[in-house]
Length: 399
Image 1 (cartoon, rainbow, N blue to C red):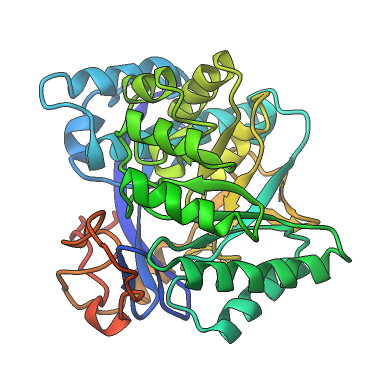
Image 2: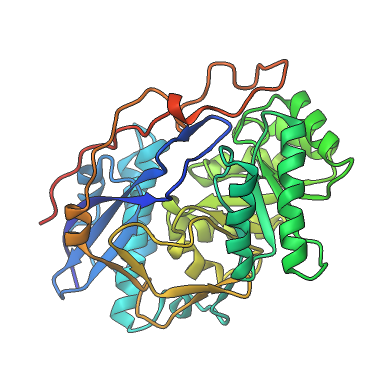
């Protein structure tokens, strides 16, 4: 079997409401979701969700190769970035192609990826993550009632701007999930998205902990601030989680050496091989691993095969436009199906015919605010009117 070509598409996740975090909001709730389809000479096509920036350069490293040699091809792609570096969107493209190759390998074997990787249990524990900083109280309650109807008993809220507002919102969600769980206390997490300084983070979380029991605080300070993460870790009762924006094992090493992480995270867009390697590194430090992402299907399969996975992020209960996934959410877990590969199918026609115009904008959760980490007083959540959806990168038409 040989790799013969690739196609790129960009679909959207339509939330039907504003989504965002402490850094900004997508007002219309429409978020671009790029993907790559990798073709073979035996008619098997693999799907990867994530960046396709510089895909032509990275694809040259794997073209004509046997896609079943996935981990070797992953390292070939890393070598292509030796001088320029593999950070950012370029690392995401490596992960996208890597996930597509795992999809091909499992399809060729006639097995779902979770079974090919050695998973025993198709169930992957989940927590709710609604990207919810702009929601009203009623909207926040409503979406967590929907999550709760699927058995979810853990939730991560966006915050970090106002401690009183965070306490109020976390308490609302705690009440919803406690009622759904018939009195069993849920797990609550807060994601500050790198919006605080070290001292701000300690004060903010410690104040919340006067009345709430937080399972973890996520990205309280900058992603690379190993010493700062360790300061927060020592200053609060909650665990500290981070890692979704790190690109390569070398970026995890200083954080682990400083004792700054209690929960090691990886992003779905960074690929299956990266997750497996990070999980092994975390396991060597006796730490758990937790994937994050909008449609983390590749890492859900991989999570079944590592000993230290604890829980995976569940964002929207519906897949992006034009995609169908062989999984369901019930009893608080993703339940993976038996379709060969990832169980991910792409309706290219539905994607191309449903394209909607986007308005270019300078703001949004992808742009760090000027005052982030320097606020002396509580800040109001960002207004969606000031942060409409940015224009996604243009991509080649599908063949």
